[in-house]
Image (cartoon, rainbow, N blue to C red; front, side):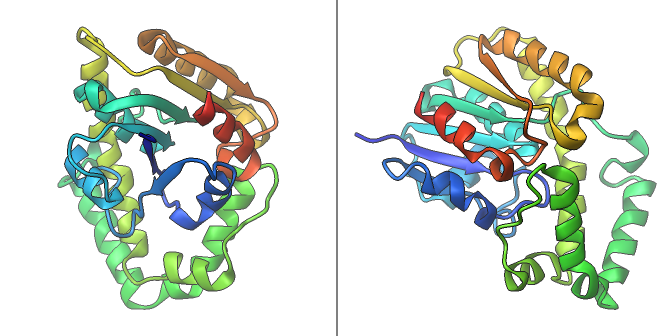
Length: 249
């Protein structure tokens, strides 16, 4: 039976922008989580349900950025469910944020209030597309955004979109801490894993530290590491072929 693959995007990423990855793997059944419908930080059962995969069915997992933490938690807590793991420039467990901005604290409340205010007065609707284009410009070497203006506006210009982005970022800090604890304990089993690490574009400024962190994670997982010198953080835009190749391997 063909393994179903579940792809979990990163912060402020849409399912539409992973279309090229899916297109390169026509022989595989790949389900991309929509973060506007199901939070990246959702538990395993919620992610599985969002992907339309039956309980207990084995899956392959692909995670980008903070989506990497989500799939890593799945693979560590339910190893018998996961057959393969592809971590694409995954966030590291050291990325636990600033305590003053943890959910429920003063900094978090201020950010939420500002995000709600901006949403009410229409700032996301006005600047959403520009924010998206800036993300692509800074996060990729190709600077080729697959999203149409209409899709970018619908995704990034919604009244609550910026609040959603903050929710995902703030909650990812707790997820990073949770995964760190799982990695610190004995790992009874883990699916074969590949880490794709971007060191090009704007990623080059922190490439040495970033690569060392990724290699340390790979050592804990017994995983292989592939360095992508011509790709920045948005690997699915710069080098979707690398993701496809790692998924097939």
